Image (cartoon, rainbow, N blue to C red; front, top):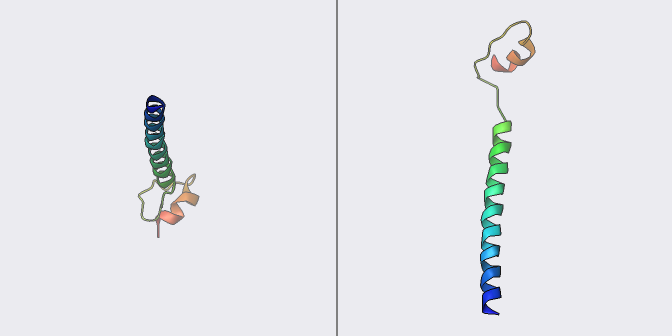
Length: 57
């Protein structure tokens, strides 16, 4: 019974580490996708003018 409890503990700890790592990766990806384009340098041409309006603020 001790061996089973030890294995369950090890597996549980590994699952916790995996869950925390996955949560950090998802959080970083979410923050990366939320760009604020205000104040950014952009190449404003006729084709990209609609995206440059925010950059001019």
